[in-house]
Length: 309
Image (cartoon, rainbow, N blue to C red):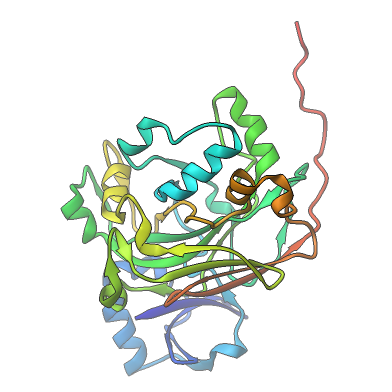
């Protein structure tokens, strides 16, 4: 099944997407509250929809507009290797030991066709093509086998990245923080695992992922090339703590899924950083298409430098 959240006069509405029509759930019902039984929710929407509206008539929001947390992992070895080249490094041995992640900003989530502003002070703006899993029910200290049953579905994700800010703040052995938290794009649809099962291969699904800037394809990969599986990611995230329904777990950038990797392999002249007016189009087969225009952001406010002693 495929679910969407769309904007309505009374607030966000959730519904089941069938072909090019949305079978709406009752007003006030959020997908995040239904993740433990999406099949039941979908069958109810088909049986007795609150309304049926053409997909082209609604403005899609992120399927989960307000996730409790967003964790972003690094699971594609080709991406890690390519970006490491940018800094004259190699894939660290520790990367192979566990699926590393960081927490990014749940308040920065945007819909699949929303404009994205350049972060304040950023001059090297980039995108990251990913697929995120959405947690369906709470748990802690999960085994890999248990974790598989806690995944409600999958959604296309773009982890927008201010590379110059990211590299600067990580010099103090923290971050990425302001390098990442202006925008994270999710959607257009949340797809349940059973719909993707025919494509299962490797650690994910054998489906193409492509990234384009202003209509020109700049990279791509197969989703199945992840070096860690989503159950491994979720099991690691749950160690010693709780994961909750609606938590988002990004795969990390696929191979060829960002400009930074292109710069690492071919040099900084391979492609200009993103700027206002550019359009980024990300596609994952069966998960849909994101199309976002980059717009001017705001200038940084205030001088935050510490005095030197």
